[in-house]
Amino acid sequence: MGVISIDIGGSFSPQLAKDFSAMRGGHAQAVADAIKWLAETVLPCAIRQDHRLHAEGAFPENCFGLEK
Image (cartoon, rainbow, N blue to C red):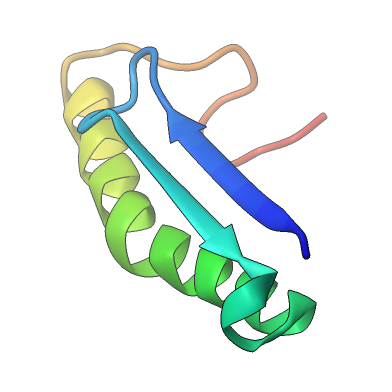
């Protein structure tokens, strides 16, 4: 069975790592668990960090949330 491994580093804070196994409930469940974890744990931290950086005048190359 497969494993999804997520390793968050660099300028992301906090730096985390987590694995999601298909053994628990199948492949689709592993994907759903990974998405849920990212949405509930990583995304709120990333949003707070982007707001802080914006307030400090720091911007990513393509602006926040825009993909070219």
